[in-house]
Structures are given as C-alpha cells and as structure tokens.
Length: 119
Picture 1: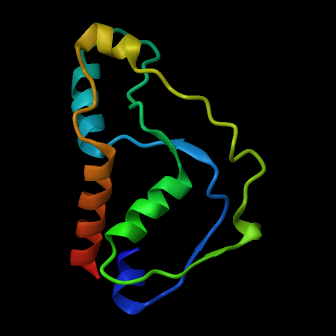
Picture 2: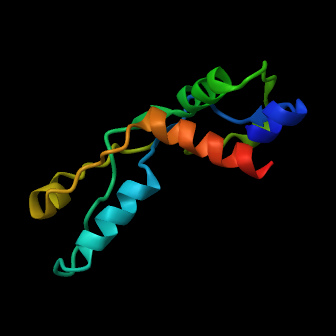
C-alpha cells in the first residue's frame, strides 16, 4: 500500500470478503515468551480481530495521503478463502494472563508507516 500511495500504483486484490485473524506481531512475541515455560500442548495465541480483508483494505486506503485505485482479480480468489474458524486464546489466557494489547487499527497504522519509511 505504501508503494501505491507513493507511486500511484494500482492495488490488485482477490476476495475481500475472506475473514482472517490479525494479531500484532509484538503481542505474538510476548505470547511466545510466556509459552516457553508451558507444558507441551496446543495453544492459540491470537486476538478477537477476525475481520474481512475488505476492512483491512478500507483502513489502509483511508490512511493513504492520496486516492488509491483498487482492482479485483478473480484469479486471486482461493476456493476455501471464506472458511475461517475464529480462534480463541482463552486457554492460553487462563494459563498465562496473556491477551493482546495493541489495537488492530494501531497495528495497521504502524505497519503502513513502517513501509512508508522503506519506499
């Protein structure tokens, strides 16, 4: 998105209705540190931020300093893209007290600013 903003490049996308879970990597790393001392097992380190790709794209285009042109490409659609179970971090939270701290909108802004500095 930073390149699209800077150079006026069109953003091509697939299915915007697909739901995914987004958790800030800084929160994930905090979780990994806590997980080191847990017994072997399956633990979800996730957030309650299961949102559509459209939400993410809308946030990014809304933060852009100029208008971003987007275009759908049906060849980028995946057959299973809408079958996404919402993860729960309750078990991990009960054992460690961990929960995500960084809001999704802050993650999106921080990520965009990181890439703005790179392009």
